[in-house]
Image (cartoon, rainbow over all chains, first blue to last red; front, side, top):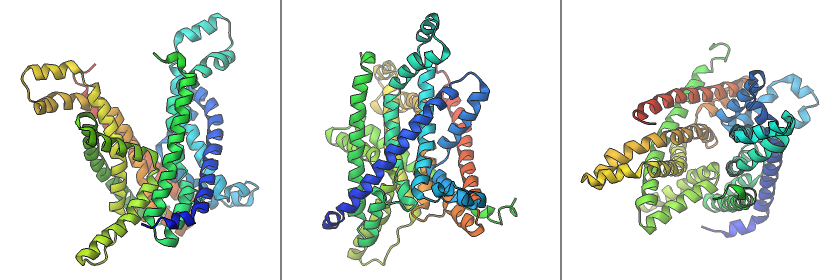
Length: 227
Length: 227
């Protein structure tokens, strides 16, 4: 193995790393913002509100993310009306298609996590809030969501790692993320060990960093649940 | 129906068979590795325990597609380097084999964790009772630990299986003609990528639904006499 290839290509790998982190952070932020109303709707007792969201979650969790990206990036080009509309500026770019697919996907998984946590809110807390005369809206804002989001931290940490690993699919639709960079190095030098092992190490380090951040967050936000 | 899909329905269904084959063969490999990993972590000495720990850490830290590329392209070089020494002809690594090895290897780690948790969940008193009756450790495992463990392992096992099925979509990236690959071929030829990717997405949901029925049956079967 000849790791001087990697040294020579470090700038490319770091550029890829930058794109990977950028895709990850942007999709996580959009996905998180979407997931909160979705989770409240999925936990609703009203089936007109609940069922459409449940279907969205079922479809996005039940199909491979690769298919979701292909549908958005390659599939939508099938429709002439879309190609002629102003939206095409967004959908013709692999970058935006990747972000849309990642954000919708993580929104579905995260909504499912939060939904579970909302439904597990201790009854006593809600009754106490009602006894204090809190409106439905206030209950969510001050009691249910803060408690549910805290209890979701460990599961959400897994979802963030899952999303990090999912960003490699950007490399499949022509973007040069960390995986895309490794693919380029491999095809230029025919050095699969050097390129994919180095990319793997980069991912390993990011994964450990995320695990560490979430451990800190758990210690901070879940102190009251520690025994 | 065949006319609507421009005669490409048989191709998609052929791809679906490949998808299911890859999924089932990877599952078998994953079960085997999972049993090894779980036993190494529970009953092994310090060396086998640390190998099992490294195995699970690496798998959880590196994206599946990076591992698949490493095994597909790297395996090619490795096999031919060995082949050179023995004077074999050039050997092409089959994407199906590379896919099965990678997916089996990845999910072996997850299965290992599932089995470890399930074995630890078996009632300790029952195991002690077995020993007290004079059963050998092997008899205790076969008659008490194993049947008890299956019940606890079913939900985790099923969850792993669903993720595994979705992961098989990645083999299309290394050129195996599964249903995702064939959907691309058909979609590009007929200029209907959206239609074909949607069909394949629906087929993935179908596999999920069928698995769901199978799991319900298994759960009922193994919960006989359960709580």
